[in-house]
Length: 420
Image (tube, rainbow, N blue to C red; front, side, top):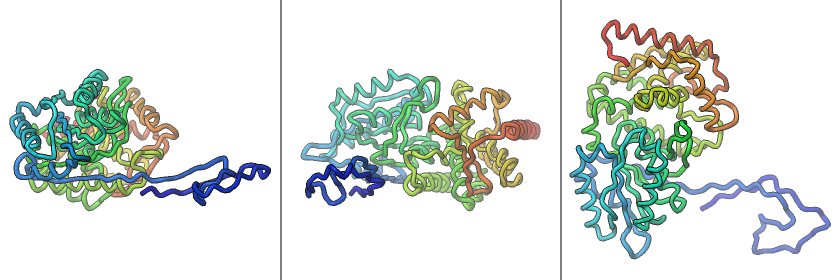
């Protein structure tokens, strides 16, 4: 159902008095010339957690694929190329099981894309994805099943959101970063004009499935990346969860199943709560609170030629903004240093040589502002669990925070701790 509210109706001149038209309803009048109508579009976020989707939990996926008529639901599968070696046989089994369902028809062989930021930098790749949709005659009631890390989810999701103005998209994130953050998001984008996520859409996925088994083949570096977003969202939303992450940082680094799954599930539910209950899922306002630590992260990635993973750049950005918040806002220096130590204990980088290129880094502030338009709005924190939106950055204080972060990194290396 749509809820409709009429705002600021202005009447036509009194000399024109049309006869009432009851078909319009009492709210509409031909005597009015201006209508500002506020309405809500119903959205559903379907999030599922599974232990082994391709085996015992297959029914969870099958239940999400609803035919819209007498014919079976068409499903096209896209996957990260890196999965072809480690999960290829299981993906083929999954496709076979889909084809074995009477209500479902898997079209085409599995389509593979090279993962990482490279798949978001070439518009020709998006054209190839769209061409595959068209060749298979997918429509708005068809399904695109995308299995991969955040970049693959972004690229295929962007194509699915624009084809026919939206084909049903089911995301199966295969990295901790995508499972703990972007998988459940309503954003899809590719990089353009050398800028991250310049071309994109807001579109709610049909469903998201976070599967535990599929994470097992992740290299340690990629496995740890997702927990920078877990730290970020806890600092914004939940001081108690931040304390749990601090206490479990070493276990997370060592991939302890209980600690990692608890952290990922809490992270995604905090993100989902913000998206569905925060009042601004499509970022119509000027604040981007879930992008705490991201103004510098989004700049560090292209500055590094994308050798920095997104989760690593976010780790550095969160550490930096916490040190800045301790200078300009009320965040205690103790808490700021606990954040840096927690990230390092998880095996994440907290500094990078590119931080020394401050002029180039500060260009990220303007790019961050341009992405939304209007006044620059950056989220900082005054204590764990308490965000504050600010509209300017004290560059001298930020430079001081950068210098301190570099020194902390040097000191950690001197005593043998592993930071990048």
